Length: 553
Image (tube, rainbow, N blue to C red; front, side, top):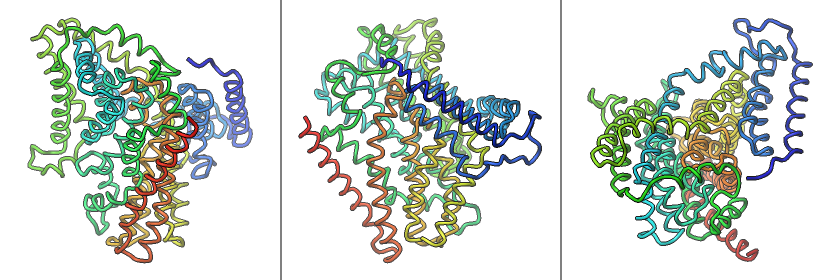
């Protein structure tokens, strides 16, 4: 592991203390401990509303320690909200109904996510204890001979599981980790592949919970069907499509760069981690595997996927006569995933007991082990929700709303580019892509008429930027789930993925500039040319990166 950096830690502590002192001195409002009805802090809706997540992200990248960084961001947000009142800051940070730590944990959706993560952790433990994961690793080593093949298999499986991004990361990670380990693919690279085939594929899949979220983001009373608008955005979702192309190019061309190259070089020499958490390595080395069969992994995973999809359809009203697209659009995805995972565990219990793969006592002990294995990502999730809540209390949404509205009225040709950049920044700061496009889509709908191609292009830019910012952010649910699915140190995943995501973002930004000009001046005729132009630019850039990397080598 990397040794702690005393200067970085001390610098971070000094910065936090200085910020808190400044806020306390400038915005102090006296004692009280409770905010009056209708209370808004002085920083509400200003650029300062984005300071807490920026502090958390900067500290995470500087100190390489995510827990204290997230907590520091929450603390800065609480003092900003309280205007220097320590008692109000403490109460808001813990108990505020819209941003506090405890209401965030007890929120039905958040609590369901924690239960789902624990149950999926239990499934992973069972796959290891039964020997199914090791049997799959042996099979994969026999049939997939190369590192490139192992990475391509991971990508294809990730593209197939498109109903939910978190489910994608956790399931593909647990299935493919033995294969990628056997071919010396670094955990950071596995995390990147998981993250790049989670949200990017969900945001272009018509049958997914993301399609439902986008459909509902279109304001009520607007003269267009939300689901039909989602379909129109797919060919304009430049970041998602560029990212999917990029992972194929990176793998097939062996064009790794930045910190990822160091991780991959070390992995080829047998070090899958390079730095960070290595407890996973010890746990997996002690797992039994000689008596396991391939069916011990394949059957539970297939059952898990089928039941989770059926669970989502059930919560969407498929039994009340709803069509499959409508059922997905109306589904409670987290509730459906919990139901599906519980049923899959019941089938796994029957299968493993019938085969003698695990004992009855060992099966239920796996729940405790699964919870322990997921404690780290759950703590990060909880602190991220707390940070997102405090950012919301400071009016970050209102600030971004004002920026977009001011620019959209006079610079329509640049609206797709502006919306993309602001979506990236907002999603990066708050860690939520859904919240980002829920904020921005109504603004875009107010700028362009319903049948305008510029409307579809601008909404696509919003979705694209939201996924990009979510991809880059250390406090994003999907980023956290990707680290957990690959059992990779979270900061390692963030730091190695960031250059790749920023490369795809830069190419997409150029694409939206071109698309805005084509869509504005030629209306519906030439705007679609932006997609092939963007993909060609991405391919050319990766070839240049590969050539430069070869020269350095």
